[in-house]
Image (cartoon, rainbow, N blue to C red; front, side, top):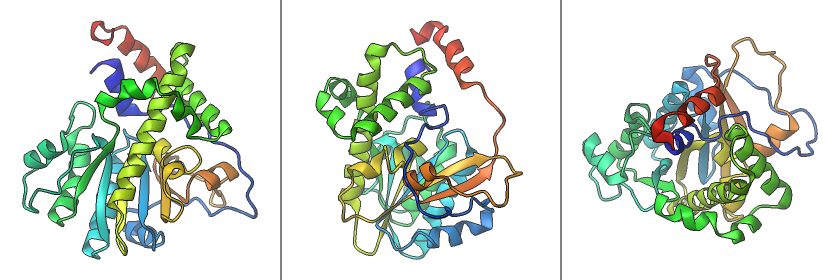
Length: 290
């Protein structure tokens, strides 16, 4: 796996630098999310046209939640489509039968197992396919990324403060080693990806049904990501799946930044500490990373 593939797998590896926003009164409490509480938490988001599940890509618990949410909505007949950051726009399973095999599904989606291990995401994808619900690639195709990097019009697709925040996230996510000349082009790719995901969600929306987006948490951020590019009339709920320490202050609540960025934060068990920047540096030193 080369550096660009590893970066795609991790997304933005550092904690998100969110925009501050005014908020009145205390925010909703941050509560741990027991596995048997997924259905109740999902139901609390309804009614809505789309649920955006923002994961940490290396948190296995988050992919388990994907499957549970999708299965729950499918059983209730409320699942309209599943959109994926993990597959390119233009790929999908709409032409497949509900009894299609995992290999047939991967082929239809053009699945890249190097970036997105199928054992992690396959259960959620297959839950939708078996329910007869289309799974849609939603990411910007790789063939369009170079064009996006050069498209200065993308700089106008976010308000000025949000654009600066996205640019700072690119710096942080690349551990400060990305040349400054590449910050704007890489930010444009991030914006173009969010725009494409928003387009796929909009096209898949159906009255009385829910489109579920599976993506990194930065993409579902209301201030910076996909919701910025959705039509005003489309009802959407953005959920941040967050790995957090088990011993959390029982009175902890969402701060103003989280309230602006997400409709809900679902806490999952914390993960062992990792030095992503050290891993990235080691990867850069490998021959195939050049």
